[in-house]
Image 1 (tube, rainbow, N blue to C red):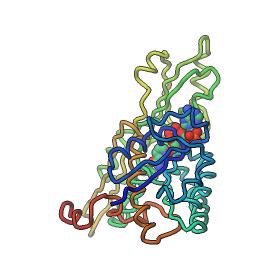
Image 2: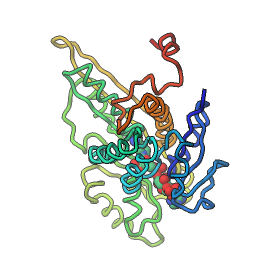
Image 3: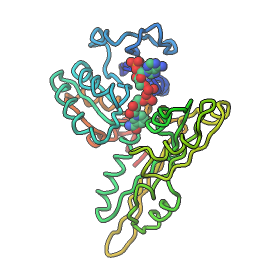
Image 4: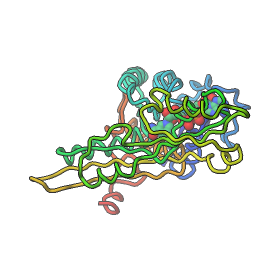
Length: 325
Ligand code: NDP
């Protein structure tokens, strides 16, 4: 059987994660990494690195491009442009802009005769699947998503932009009591503040006004003002020792009833020591599905909702029926 030939576009956390994930999937072959930086600058552990301007030269040599750029500014440009040249998979996670992004990628992919799966990972991605499954199975009920404990890159960046902050990290933490009430089937109406708290670890610049930094963080609109936020000031050493990982995770809970008052509960839980490495593993599984569906002649954009789960697995239908039904 021919290997599924993939390329990585953008070599950050996700790009590195995809390189590692491909190693665990013997049906894949990683052809090259593409970057906007000069290729000499990027060390991809022995994998060939090309400048992104050379993408087109690889037409016919790569079955699926795994797009690992950032959602804020990279993917809105790269997603549609590359979908016109190759089958693609990406993890676009700006929830509010997904419909618009889908339309752009869909048009480009159809123009090029390619298949593109957008917005996979864990959220959006596996969590999205669970939300749909929960509602389909228990139409009378409530769905709750809790995130964390985990590092939010966006919020960490926002704290690092506060004057006087040398380095910082932000953890999103679900409120235990809220989870308890949801699991109990109480169907609580939870405000933003009641669901999650935010905890920041900040390395201040020397002589910085700590009180001012703390107030500026806590009152920051959109990011922190609607939450209970705790700020801890720590040393550079402590930061390096205890806060250099990128853990994340969360829980999707569907509670509902069947019949008159029979309580039912579905729960999906992720505890990730590395958010990007896990997200990359999801990207690779979906790249397998894209490869197969494109071989069947499918074109255009898709989301996780459109992909039969058997297409994610390297096993045959017969194996899956025997082992997992
Ligand atoms: P990074 O910031 O690590 O990488 C983004 C891009 O920045 C890379 O593709 C790379 O492009 C460039 N870059 C990376 N490192 C450097 C560097 N040292 N110097 C200059 N440029 C660099 O982002 P992540 O990989 O952590 O995340 C990418 C996106 O994945 C996020 O924006 C997020 O939206 C999404 N995501 C989605 C999840 C989901 O569940 N759906 C979960 C987690 C993340 P280039 O090589 O071209 O320079």
